[in-house]
Length: 100
Image (cartoon, rainbow, N blue to C red; front, side):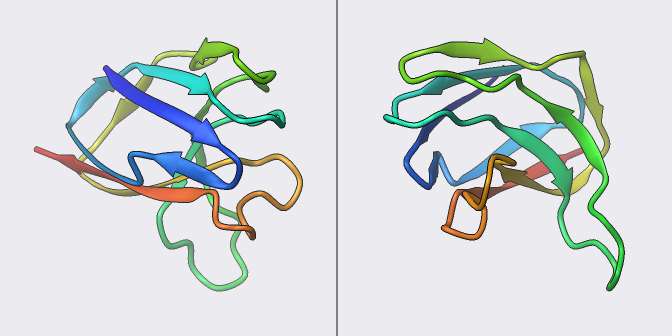
């Protein structure tokens, strides 16, 4: 279980490590704005859009949510981000390290 709290332009914890395989998201929005959580390619090649591995629905302030579908991840690094507006540009991102 991957438990994450979203706030204005922060993901807590910011750096997370989990074992490879099926990952279940449990996300809480502690902020005053709507947020979501997406798991994407950590460092896409120049000119490429990041690959989306999973995402929660948009969460209203105080709401809790889970992923839209089960997520299976292989070992490697992934980027956690809020895909709403420019929240990522404002610092709402983190790193997910998946170990074998």
